[in-house]
Amino acid sequence: MNQTLYQTLALALGEEQVMEKEPMRKHTTFRIGGDADLFVIPQNAEQVKQVVCHAKEAGVPYYFIGNGSNLLVSDNGIRGVVILIADNMKAIEVEDTTIRAQAGISLASLAKQALKNELTGFEFAAGIPGTLGGAVSMNAGAYGGEMKDVLLEATVLTDEGEIVTLSKEELELGYRTSLVGRNHYIVLEAVVALEKGRKEDILLKMEDLAQRRRDKQPLEYPSAGSTFKRPEGYFAGQLIDETGLRGFQVGGAQVSEKHCGFVINTGNATSHDVRQLIEEVANRVEKKFGVRLHPEVKMIGFENDR
Image 1 (cartoon, helix red, strand yellow):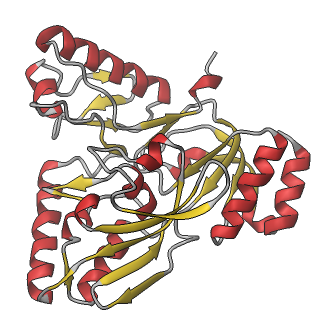
Image 2: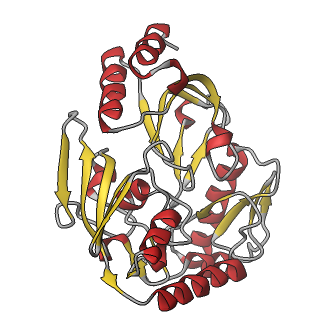
Image 3: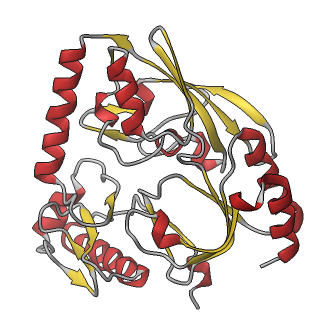
């Protein structure tokens, strides 16, 4: 790794915010991944912009992660700079029925703030194990709700290095997609618009959804959540189950016996195990039903696998 870039970033942000050879398994919910050459923890939007600018000047690739809940990192690690936007950027402001928050806040924390202020409409996201930035980027959703239902606007860093605020319409939110992801923008903060509600009702709904998650999802194992995008007109988990792949295993990676839409790490899975399993599942489902499953999980670092 470019030592000059390390020194530049350490000088600009402080040595405690820039790490070398950081194990990515510590930063993904799969608990899988080799080392990142550089791992940077900015504290605000300007520092994010600085890191990107310095990485571009050095000709070094850079990647953004939140809490790694929808991410598979190669066992060979990441050649370049990983920029964390999680607990280091989680400031939040509540004004009447709107909440403005930095992109690193977890959806669970934002849901708790909504509950505290008796605001309803965000209950669906309380159990999604991701950050606000990631949720905006992929228009995250669960139990009939999506970010596009509540999002007002988002402030992003463009690929050209500009910080701009985009309305919900400009973000072009679709099923697990948005302008942010397609254009490689980075979400810095977002505003959601909710409605006044009764704290008791909001809490009851959050508890009901949490129980449904515990009943149906393999939360006791490391995973990246729902592994495949929902194919139009079908449910991925049902197709996988009907292909006879419940419990199917490659190395330490397994199709969950509790919910076939989840690939889990049984304890010692490698990224290669997970990738091979995902490919095999997609191939077998396509052979049986003529429907191709596409992974929802983002994969980085695999260009280093030679």
